[in-house]
Length: 311
Image (cartoon, rainbow, N blue to C red; front, side, top):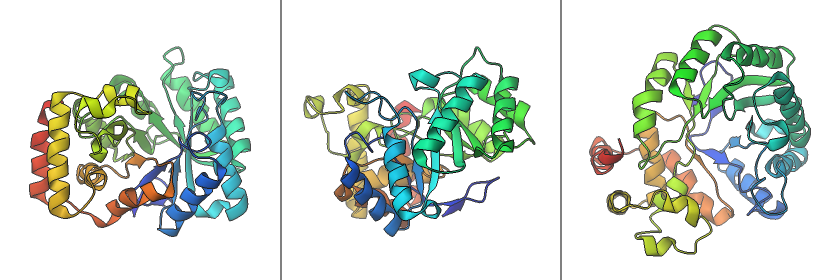
């Protein structure tokens, strides 16, 4: 467990992604996953108001509603909830009106009085950083959110945000970057220096490269026709499959799943808790196992070398 600096939250080393809830997981499956996660010691769930607007028949807010239903049954004290706004069309952008409306919508769907960690999911360069900081300070002052976090900001805008918010309640306590063995360069070169400077928590998305780092796919042919084929194809190169091959080799030596090793590599690189999601309880074990796996310096170095072309 790791305390997020600037907060009272001591989080499990896996941030359970809620993007499947209300999409590939119906209510029964969602409740089963959350029950198993909590029973295993998990306590931190990530969602967004836009999950899962991309699915046919959905409008967004489905994930928050499912989590809210679970909270209503089990109590709000079991989970730390992070949610995000900025991508849902009806309340897109970072204007004061859109952001306040988005927060109210999330509060209602989740059935809570205050959001534990609220992300600005995307930047809006039409809204100044000064105004974005002011909006967050007001949300915190009104008790609607407890802490602010950021995702999908350029390094320049991130640096400005930290500079303008430093010492205020709106100073971000966490970042959610795109980071994994096959996506290293942007984070390690441009974002990690800010993480180190401000001692901010890191919860990366696409921790498993849309599933490529589970070791299930060893060629482009394996990907064809899969549900996540579009996302997977963005990673599927000869260089990527070489990394997967080394990942599988390390996993075999450790008698662990490649999924677990890929997440452990992120923890070895200073990540607070990688985000990963499942649709069924049976998929959860390999994620939860990361709490008991610490990679040796040798194994970290091997994976670093294998993925050097992505750094």
